[in-house]
Length: 149
Image (cartoon, rainbow, N blue to C red; front, side, top):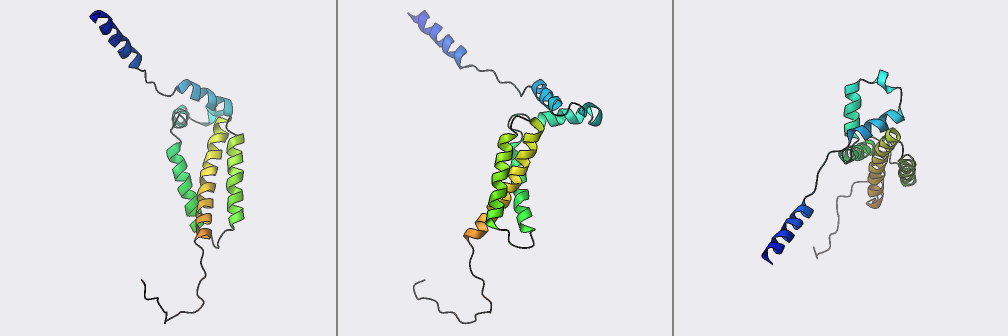
């Protein structure tokens, strides 16, 4: 009876062990070559390998945050207040483009970057519209404040 318990413990240990592996670089290279077959002459091998690694699983998420921030910066550089409908429409177009290009390795990455920029721009525009308040035309020097503060 004791031997059976020990054997069960060994089986539990062997089932609990998992194998971790990195992103398969060969698959990423195949996707890169399928998108642009003539890139072997235009882009050095080292840059292609770096790009293939950067597109690996989970590696684009930090770049999405950078693109989102770039969209917010783009909002603040606008000369006048953008229309809410235009910013929202741009974000919707970016979502549709990313969904349609998800099978293309290069197109999907570019569409995700565009989506990040559009989402940041739309978020800043919508947040400004939500907290919009009237601007005073003339300075007001005397204001009555209720006693319950």
